[in-house]
Image (cartoon, rainbow, N blue to C red; front, top):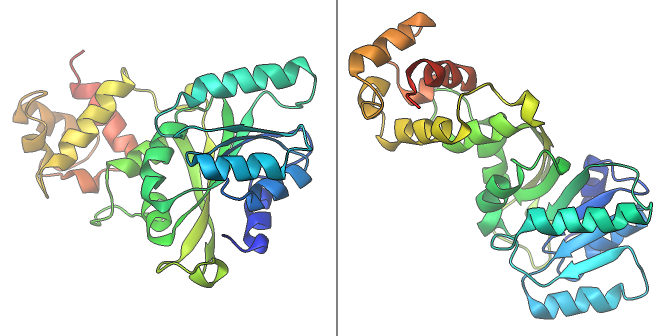
Length: 265
């Protein structure tokens, strides 16, 4: 369970207002749900645990501002559920915005899965606000070039969103107290027109993942399945990077340029 002060800060980070539609993943006993509803939100809560789903449903049985789905958020069709939920709300003129928000205190062990699931949904969500393990939050938002923490997930996060580390949440704010601290992170989701211009998103991320597969391997070697080493060296040279460049030395824009030069559709 989370200290209510942090629940308030989660809602505040998403600027939750009257009429907002909010997806909450893992509502538990409903402490954050209560804050969201009191802020005027209409909430779709997805809870995997049938016992917890029953508790939160019973707690808010008197309100029409909550719908609880007993499903695994990682496996269910969130897009379909959200489109249906948004449609039903708009038909009643309850929502002021065409976009929903995500505000959740998610289990730390599914953080990456949730991020990868939600960030490409800029056509549904305007922003995603999550409470994450602090180490994960820093790795997703603040990893720097030429460090061991700089990984493909950083390209994914910045391709689909503008992330921001908002605040640290010490472990003492939880009961029972975990062994790690947490942090609130916001992801302002981009619309498709704002994504980096690549010929194929699928092939772009395939290339990024391939580039990082070999530990400290130079791009001219790790990407040989796409084109020759010479072609890779020439492509790197065209935007001022050395032939010996490694993946952790390239920013998102650099990988976009490289992909558009060497990718063979």
